[in-house]
Each structure stands twice: as structure tokens, then as C-alpha cells.
Length: 537
Image 1 (tube, rainbow, N blue to C red):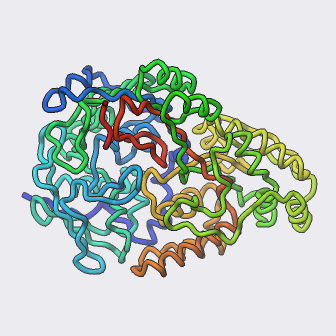
Image 2 (image 1 turned 135 degrees about the horizontal axis):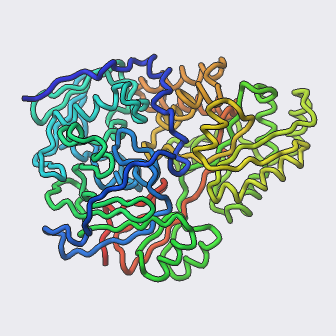
Image 3 (image 1 turned 45 degrees about the vertical axis):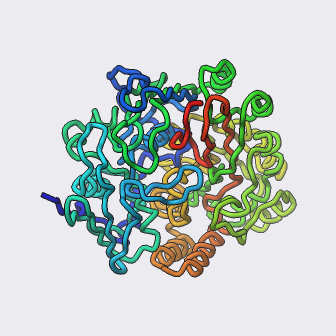
């Protein structure tokens, strides 16, 4: 019988805006998080997947992160599990990994709107999970309600403030009832990946270590610091069928090891090509450096003087020689921020606050704020490219009379020991929530509503922070595209002037591959790799 449920203690709109627990361990996808999912004890090889994929060959790839979280899509937030889940799971709607355009995945068609606050989705006929069980409406209801249950502390729940009830109409149809009209419903539900209820309830820990989805590839094994092995899901009947019999992802955190693996033909593709090696790698392989939303931000602790003064925050942005940081530290592989969004984003518009390098203006703003002889300890993560630009930040700030001490450490430790307890002045760190979605509402809420605004930079406690939240709320319910973009633009302008947390630059992501051994491959504008349209040559 089809099941009907309401999300346990379902979030209404205002509850959502106060939500911070779901992000308790998140560090803006600066790479991976500290908690580790248990390694699989399963054995197997992707080439032994059997079925119709037996003659297709295997895709060997070099990934830049180790396995530091589990795979359950309700909680997975590490860069590597998120990339793996692109291949293992499906949403009702998914976003093309390259274009970021929505398409019907487990849904037979895009969601159908019944009225302002009711939507229905019909499932793709014949869809099965990797354990051969059919995908049903009850699985869909379960997948949504477990995420929305506050007891599960899901990272994804913050993206669904509009959702009031999910119920199965019949075995193949699901109805969504909203607390308020939400114009982006069709693409936003892509954040929820559909899981088999029976498998999760039987052994959630095992599911987290070796997940079962309905995607084109099933996971055979996952070994921390070594590799992840996939095989083709031969019963898959959706829009993105596997074009390989399997995949072997080698986990090569060392940059030189990734380059060596590609040069020696041990792998066909690597992500995160070291900028210093990019020109040389491009001579021997196909390579591309793709503009992303991924950024380096400056975040200020508004609880600590003098950073509660907007003039001080602006001064430290004006005092950064961004062009030198990009040219020297990243060898040109970034673009200075001219907005919260990167210039290639479909909703980009130049922000009211754009900070070039103007040391005289920086000094003048500090003087206007009555600040002299400022000592700043800058907290940074130990991401390789962040460490490359860190001395250039110090050089810039020292040049405007701000004595700067660099505090570089492992990402999880920096957040736990300094940021989340408020024991910091300024932070510079990477982040890229665009792996979850590309719409402005999602990207802005990540940093300006919830954990970051309530607990980290504390902007939500200011009149401007509350105004930004009001603008985002209004945009979320606005059905007119032009009016919605205008509201987003106002929110971006406010953030660009107040700069509680704001981009310094948007990074380019360098990927290299052997195009003679791998066809159909396209590099991503987000962290990770996708092989949904790729095949061994």
C-alpha cells in the first residue's frame, strides 16, 4: 500500500530561517570534513560487473581528496562522497553536472504544479535500485521525510524551507504540499537523492559505507585512502546510462602523484591539476581550467571590535592586491570578485560593492573608523592553493599598516577550535556550495542564513543581515523571474557593501584527461568529476 507521511516536526518558514543545527559540522565544502565513514569490507572489481556492460571497459580516474565522510546523501558533505553520489544516486530531478540545468531523472517528467503550493511527480516506470528492488513512491516519501526530520540533523534540510508535507498518491505518484509558494521547486528538489527505505532501515551504517541507489553505477567497494570501485547498474533505464563497465577512482591526495598517474597512463583523467604543473600537463594531455563559483572568502567576526565597523571590513578588502594574489599564487586561475556570483553565472550582475586594490582608500577608511596600529591574526585552512596566497594577503595588509599574523591549520580543526567558538578575528578560506545547486537562493542562504550568519560571522543579528534575509524570503516566493532577480540583486548588493563574509575571488578548476582514451568527458565547474556521459575509447 502506498504510504503517506508528513515530515516529522516539519520546518515552517521561520523555523528554517533559524536553522543552524543541520550545518553543525559543515565547513562550506572546503574539501572534506573530519568525520570518517567506515571503509567497506566488500571485495570486487568493476570489470566484473557483468551484464551488458561487460565489453565496455573501465574508467580509471585520479581524485584529489581522500574518503573522510560516509556516502549517505542525507549527510554526505565531503567533496569525494558528493562526487561519487552523482553516479550512484538519482533525484527526482537532477542538475546536469556541467551545464547545471535541471532534467527529469527518477521522475518521468519535470514536476507538475497543481496550484500555488501543491506539486506532483510521477516516477519513471521500471526504475530499480542496485539491489533489484523497485523504486516506489514510498521510497521517495521516506527519502524526503528523513531529511526533514530535525532529529536526523541533515545538511540538506536547510535547502527545503518551503516543504510542509510529502505523501504518496499511489505507487508511482508523489505529492508535495508547500508551506508557501516557492518558484524554484522544480530544480531545488534535486538536492534530495532517493534511497531504498528497506536497505536504510535494515542497516544504516552499512548503507553509509556502501550505498545502494538507482543511478547508472553501483558501488562495489570503498577503501579509505586507496580507491572507490564502481560497476555498471545493468538494469538502469534512465536518461544517463553507464557508458563503461565500471570505474576505478584512485584517491590521490598528493598533487604530484596525480600528475604522475596521468603521465604513466595509470589513470585517464585527474582533477585539481596543480597550477604550477598546468602548462606542462597541457602539452601532453587535454586540459581545461573552468571558471567556478568556488571562492576564497574573507569572513569577519562581527562580535569582535573593530570588525563590527563596516569601514574596517571594507578597508581590508580594498587593501588586498587581488591581481597579484591570482597571478602569483594561482598562476592566473581565478577571477577577482565583482559580485557574490562569478561572471559566468546566469544570474550574475555587477554588485554595488566591488573592491579593487586601493591601499590609500584602505588607510583612509581605517582612519575614519578611528583604527590605527591594528594587529590581525588571520585564520586560514591548509588547502594547498590557500597556503600559496596566504603570504600575499599578509604582504598586502602589512602594506596598509595592519600587522598580520597567519594562522594556518587543518580545516576541521580551525572551525572547531577557533571559528565555532568565536575565538577569531578574520578568516580566509575556500568554499563551494554550488555542488548542491546553482540558484542564487541556495548559494546565498548557505552563508547568509543559518549557521554562518547566526554562529560564525553573526550578520543575522544586524539590521542589514535581517534585511538580506527578508529580501531572500521575498525572492523565494516571487513567481516573476525579473522581479525575483531584482530582489536577489538587492540582497547581493547589501552583502557586497556590508561584507560580513564575501568573496575575494572565484577560482578556476583545472582538469586534465587523455582524450584518446576517454570520450565524452567534460570538466566540471564544481569540485569533483563526472562520468555520466563518458566512455573508455
